[in-house]
Image (cartoon, rainbow, N blue to C red):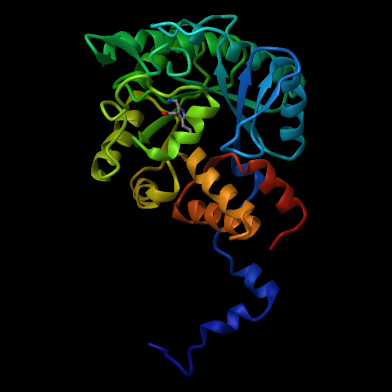
Length: 328
Ligand code: PBG
């Protein structure tokens, strides 16, 4: 074994072109998915206070935003909707004229090359804010499956290119695959939120999407943050049910889970760089306490280094601009 002074690892760090040649992980706009929040009304571009730079868009403004995302070289958007009304069964989620269904149509029209992915869940649409149907005070898994399948199918029929079930109901990927196939939509892929943890990092999103549970919490269906082996079983079961892409969510505090999933499975792997991760960076940057650009690029590089192929991130537009400017 060579060691110092024959071995000098700094040799490869001296010159920028050498650092470039030996860099193991790179960020590209092509790996990102940008989430968008869609709401009713006219001319709405409503700021989301804990998520500076993110907005709730009305349909008449959405097209322009989608076109901007596409022009930045970001290949896909992930749509979330704020319905006009909520009810116990979340019927706005599977309304053929629902807010996300309309949004899918608008985006496909405005930016035909942009991939439209829709989040499949009920929490934005239920008056109690849970991700499924409530029966005897509990979120009922099996009754929820049919509604998730209807939601996914209605989104695909409105033009969604891929669906992403996030409700953490057992069997949701299978139920959606069966519904899509039965309707002839055999070529539409499913990105499963496979290992989704019950995380405090979703706090800002629940402001953005108005989806805070009105009683209790989501620990009865989302995963315990302490469990990595269980996360592998979740990923395995999404794959067995037919997921084409699997996801670990959140990203930052779960990179060990990402790394292990990368080693165990050959499916494309996504991470969700969630709202709370974004808010923390934005808040500290606004105070002048950190360098937003350098911190953001470092965090996102770490997600790729851990093994993520795809990053869903509210930073996506900024990153695409920085990369275009030729940031090292
Ligand atoms: C819907 C859903 C949530 C997120 C994505 N899909 C909220 C939740 O589970 O409470 C969170 C995304 C984020 O925090 O950025 N269930």
